[in-house]
Each structure stands twice: as C-alpha cells, then as structure tokens.
Length: 473
Image (cartoon, rainbow, N blue to C red; front, side, top):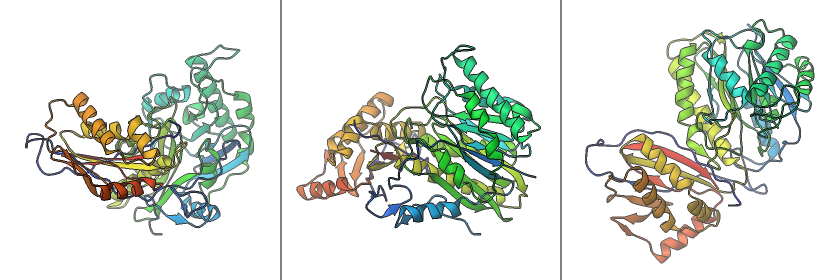
C-alpha cells in the first residue's frame, strides 16, 4: 500500500462473566475520533503535518544536578503551527535536576544528568537483530546498582551490525563504536561513573557505520549551551522522518514534581517492547524497582499497542529517568502511576497520528475475548489487514473485509471459540449481528461519509478481556 498504518491498543476493565461463563461474545463498534487535520485545516497537536526537520541534525543534552496537571493525554487543537510550538514550549518545563542544550552538528541529540542516579528504567526492542546501543543498554540495565548520568542519542544511523573499515563490521564493532561515544561523553561532561554511566541510543539506516569521530567532536559545544527551562529543544532535535515534534508533560505529586516525555518515531512502528525512541524524565523520588515495574506495565499498554506498518525496529528504546530531587509524599506514587500512563498514552497517540504517510487513524476496541492476548491479536489482526487498511485508505466502508479478518484471526488463533454472538459496528452503526449483516442503503451512505473523514474509528470488538487499538492509514 502507498500509505502507512498505525494501531494502538490498551487493556481495559473486564466485562461480566469469565472464560468459562459461556460462549465468547464479541462486539465491534466504531466511534468517531479526533483525527488528522490537513495543513490547511485546524491545527491539531496529534494530527497536522508539520515540516520535517529530518535533514537538520543536532545534538541535545539533558543533565541533572543535585501547577496543575497539563493535558498529558489529551488532544488539543491549534490555529497555527506557531501556536502548537508555543504550547510545547510550556509543556516541556523540565523537572528539577535536568538541563538541556542543543547545537547544530551532523549528528546526535544528547541527554545528560550531571549527578549519578540509580533511579532509572528502560525497555528495549525484542527484534532478534538488535542494534549495538540496545546490546549496551541491556548490559547497563542488568548491572546491579548501575547509576546512569547520561543518554547519548543519534539519528540517521542505527548502528545495527555495521560494515566498514578498521575493526571490521558486525555487532562487536557497533558495540565498540557506541562505547567510544559513551567514553567521550563521560570525559566531556566530567561524569564520575565514566562510560558505564552513559546509555547510547541510535536510530536510522540499518547497516551503516557510525561517524564516531564526528559525533564525539560535537559533544563539547553542547555543554556550553545547557539550560534547565524546557525539554523542547531535545524534542525537536531527535526527529528524523517525523512530521512534527511529540512531547507531553504534567505536574506530578504533592510537592510540585514534574514528569515530561518526548518521543521520536514515524516508521517501523509495531512495538514489541519499544520500537521508537521515548525519553521520560521526572524529579520525583520513585524507587528504582517501582520505576522498572511501572515502565514495563505502561509501555505494554501504550507503545506496545500501536502499529503504523507492522514492522518492529532493531534499535529503539523507552527510557525513564529520575533525578530524585523531589521527595515522595503519601499518595504520590499512585499519582505518578496515573500520570505516567497518561503521558505514555499521549505520546503513543502522537506517534500513531504522525506515522509516515498516515492520512487516516483507526481505533479498535476489543472486549469479551477469553484472554487479553487473544483480544490484542484480534485487534491488531484487524487494523494490520492490508485489505481492511486499503478500504479505510480508499474511503470504502467494506464491512465484508472486516468480518473476514475477524473470522480469519479467530480461526487461526482460537478455532474452538464460539463466535455465534459476534457483533460488529462501524461509526455507531451495527453492521453484523446474529451471524447476519444488518446494513441498508441509508446506512451505507452514512458509512461512506464516515470513511471520508481524515480520522476513522473502526472496530470495537467486545469480550471479557479488553484491548483498545489505534491505527493510522
């Protein structure tokens, strides 16, 4: 297909009954979603195409030293691109203990805390050919008590099994390149933890060798441009094929803490433990083990439930880092969990709507499946179906394609499940129930109008387990 697709899923509350309570009852419903706004229309944070900055490579640095919640998960409309960027400036107010600096160069955003912090968590791609930075990051994560002071991020080259001269190619050469950059970052910023306190991240072309010397040469200018006002410069500088920057921020806890997240990603988006670059920073003193538990949980319910093109990247990472500058009070941990979910959900939605070639967005909601795993497979099967995505992209409400893919997935993944109670609706119109299509000429006219909208909401599939899926076409 000429257009990309994206899907987002989130586990929800269980319905009545249980796995043994009788036949599986499926319910498919579509609801209209705020969606893609053309550049000449109302400006929407999660939808409008922005001029890509993929050709301008920069370096950013975040470093740590010793109001009311914002719209972390909402969709707002803006009258202009300038108004959108002004809004992000405010959203990006940094948590205590972090600084950001940027510098024009040929490569790499950079994020650095100046004091070691063992309060951090990360999840990585499950692709079996991971990039060298993922290999290094996993080693850092597995090291007991490892404190992190910096995250070095480059775009344009993903450092996956690179070829080249010198030490040769392959994963070992890529790891050596990543470690060289980490070592130089530690020297430039005077990090007491050395290279081991730096996490590298790379995204871009697979198979190319990193320009290590060029990256290292441009780390020093960043140090002179550090500021602690906003994360926005880093948000812009990690973009590649992204059409617009993606950032969500909110106050958290009762002592004025902050949680801010930025994301990069527009292609190779069907996450399986992160297929994009996402950086979340907070100043709240969240215990390390709790951070790791929550990041895994919230990533699984947000980033792992979206798809643009059903491909899993080799290199990408979701990282949560705390400076620990704001103490926890009673109830703050629960508030942090809620806000982390909102920020992750918002960034996941932004990535979907920003997908390469995306002109429509589909949302699927699956309930009633015997298990949450089956609910997710069913939802993703629908939104990743080339025929069904083609119908959406072509503004054709072909309900037969929807029924066919539901039947295919159920036949392959759960052939013994009773699907006689399956119910499917689009745009609030029931189109299939009691094993019979329930459509009319009038309904078809309304469905055609629905499919002409830039943002579509497709299946709501109801069962015991619930999964919500957002897909861009």
